[in-house]
Length: 90
Image (tube, rainbow, N blue to C red; front, side, top):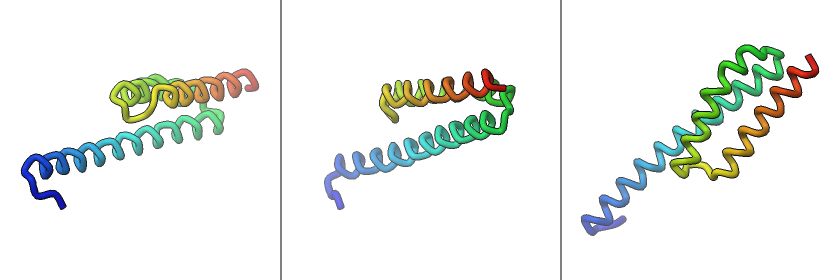
């Protein structure tokens, strides 16, 4: 364990950031799971309502560096593609 005052503070900050980032990633994954479930169930209205909030969350996380920007784009692309495929087939 660190003994210097600055090292102790840096450790506290790291732990705090780690916990916050994990909470945000969990929130993101839950939102993505909810949209996928709504699309697969054929509930396009619920999915379209949730897609704006989820895209906003994805963009915020990419901007803060919690996820990579290419990962954010991939998530958004896959959700949009799944939604359009499901709505086209229905």
